[in-house]
Amino acid sequence: VKVNKEYAMRYYKLSAAKGFMCAQTNVAWCYENGVGTAVNKTEAVKYYSLAAEQGDTSAQPAIDRINSFVESSPPDNIA
Image (cartoon, rainbow, N blue to C red; front, side, top):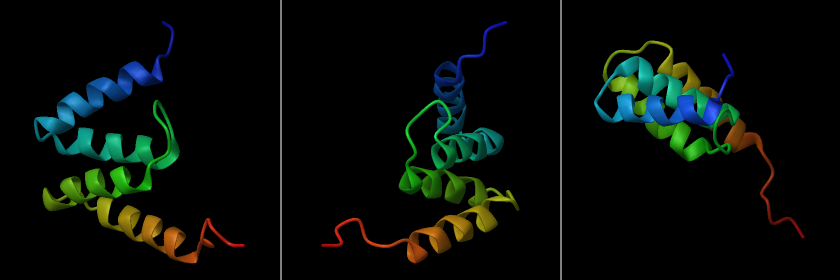
């Protein structure tokens, strides 16, 4: 079976939209790591937050990790 990460991401997002906590975490991880999609930390935090609201104990540490990375990164527009 050939792996299709974009296809997997599409179905994770469909499940996440229906409120499935594990799918929300999977979508967040994919956005965080650029698997099946472009890296998008804002979307990652959004989906991790949805999962955290439902009780996913791995979601808040992931949000904290992303936020600490963003805060420690230099601005993109350094002259």
